[in-house]
Length: 138
Image (tube, rainbow, N blue to C red; front, side, top):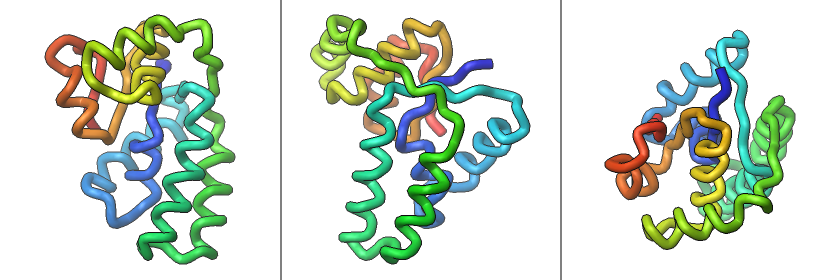
């Protein structure tokens, strides 16, 4: 089963101080056992890098751990997809729901792939879940 996963889920799984860390860990176990495949827009790489840098700057994780976590997260076999051809749909999602184009990219990819979008972003989930039943909050 394919699942579009956003960066917030990975961060929840790897940052122990995140709310619902355990739920994200369970999803990672499903992935590791082959029960599901992860897909994401290629921008997930940059979101993960940026989130780790910000976490270090805010004192959440030490610099040595940043490199370790980055290496581990970026080595996951996530099928990174170019979503440039979905720019119109990304724009529509962003305008309609008041979300970023980054979030719109995940939404457009999940819609195109006809699969669930797993997110740890409660704000995104709350913005779209009444209309988009294929978004799941981890």
